[in-house]
Length: 278
Image (cartoon, rainbow, N blue to C red; front, side, top):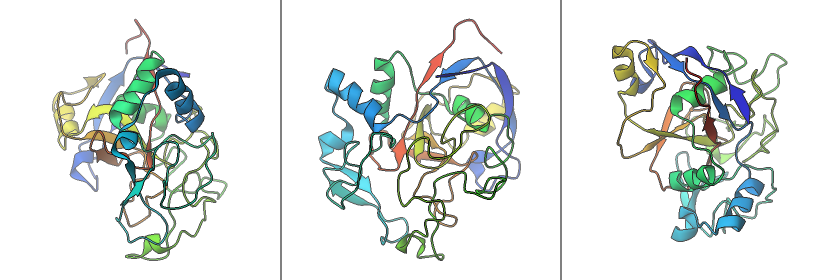
């Protein structure tokens, strides 16, 4: 894990494209620790071997899966898809231990983190660590390409609006999931700060979270709403394209039904540091 020092950052934007990303407001955070990478298939297998945990996908008998050639925004219930086989019976897919564990629900992610004495990060902790001091859409700047011209993240590059998922042009080198260290880390050492998979965080989703925080002035260690129907996800995924979703980046606030097992959703864990306040 990487220690993230206590500090503050500006969250949200007064010029946001989506209302739930506004307004801009100041957030202060206590120090915490955060996993350097997304939790991998190997990591999750070790947890399951030790505990016998069964994920929501394994209980349901399917996960929600998308593949090249499907219509934009189309998802399919793929029989026997889970963290073990992210595409289930829908297609053959070579699984390696260094891919992120996906098709896990919020409780499945929590169970893993708690087993290791950790927890899911709050939405604010996640953004602070993934930004690593950046104020742009991406940790390295305003576009998906890094200063050296290469893609800095795994996301979908499709041919045209309305048919983007008919084909993946593979400009970033990956059709679907990518190994958790496939792209360079951000300035603080975190891999996959954006793209590859949506990342589950602890907070319930509410459209007015930022508005309430801004009204309180500088908000310290925000935890999000006490209740809700969906949980926040952040960072975007391999499925997100420029015109369909476009959620890859540091601003977009995704949301998901807690037990919904999508094969483009994963997580990393955090741990509190006692007596280190902002």
